[in-house]
Length: 435
Ligand SMILES: Nc1nc2c(ncn2[C@@H]2O[C@H](COP(=O)(O)OP(=O)(O)O)[C@@H](O)[C@H]2O)c(=O)[nH]1
Ligand SMILES: [Mg+2]
Image (cartoon, rainbow, N blue to C red; front, side, top):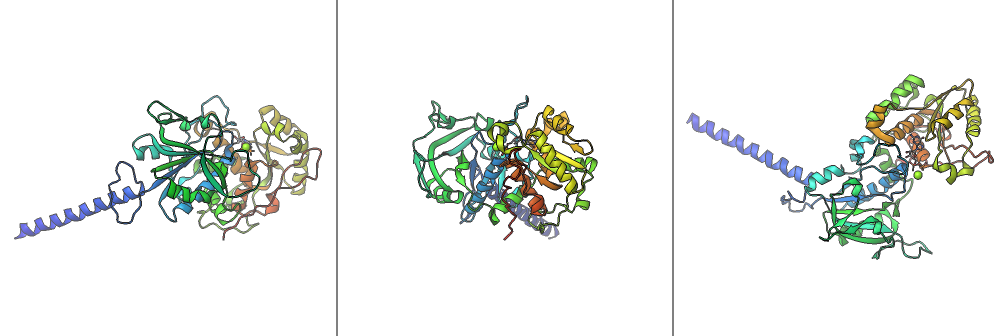
């Protein structure tokens, strides 16, 4: 009798274990639903679909961050009806990232905190997408483009048409009918279907098309910048923006630099970072470190926006005034300037201490130009006072970071003027919105 009871107990335990295993398998399958393993049969559960996107190759790092926000909110909107996961486009081959080492296939976790992104929408890295699919395949590609002949009045519309770009954005069909492309450097990847999609509209406008006119497990939309923000500067914009927390390893480097050279710590400066979903600072709560930060945009901007940028001497003159006004001695310079230009800028100061972050080779090799740009932005975001460069998205992202931290907008939304226009128009104050 005893042995029978014991046997029954063991059998029972075994059954419970089995149930658990089956349950967690199901959970895994619904969380990372895959093409191959998709044998789960939940009565109402819909299979997860994957959205991939990319931005016109000519666009820089900080406009790309802006396009992420648009697509992220599209994915959020899709998830109101169907489970979609956003596949993060690997970073690489950016126009400004020109050092000798090849900078491709950089995952998002190098630059951003994925857990924070995931508190807004479900995201996975491209490499994880490939693992989940088990095959280097993307089902459908819709290459976004404008309408032929441009437009005279604005209306939301989309239409599958011939490709306006004679190269079809570099997509070409091989002998087996597979669509080939550079695909972020993963040239083994192929797409099953390709079409050009003329588009004029906000990001949310593509939702019905994705839900009803596409059937593939994954849909890729290159040139996603054609889709506009659903509501620029509103609650959803800021939710997506707040979720884009920089990776901790980069914040740590910036914080170390602040403490070592700029007498700046979060406790002293009232800039302690909290979980973004709970963080809600009032304007003026953040004090910032005892330094002025400037974003001195040079290189390609010198010819593109020559009259709106100060000369190095002009910038120095302006910074001196600021140091006096705010009774400070230290200056942090975020810049893409070559060494000689930075040295020239520095030479205009006698008393003030001028700082720039310069990575060791080891740090550079790990985090690349994108990581260094973020460290610069992070340090600039913690200054008592910030001033940037005219219509630079690099400056804009610093301003947003400062809004999140809780600075007085007067200490944030500033830009340096060109030498000939000392009274130039200052940037719009896109202040943070929570509700
Ligand atoms: N590290 C660093 N890089 C910069 C700075 N300013 C510009 N860059 C580089 O130049 C690129 C500028 O492109 P983008 O992000 O599109 O900003 P925008 O062109 O100024 O609107 C950045 O991604 C960086 O690679 C800076 O202050 N620090
Ligand atoms: Mg740019």
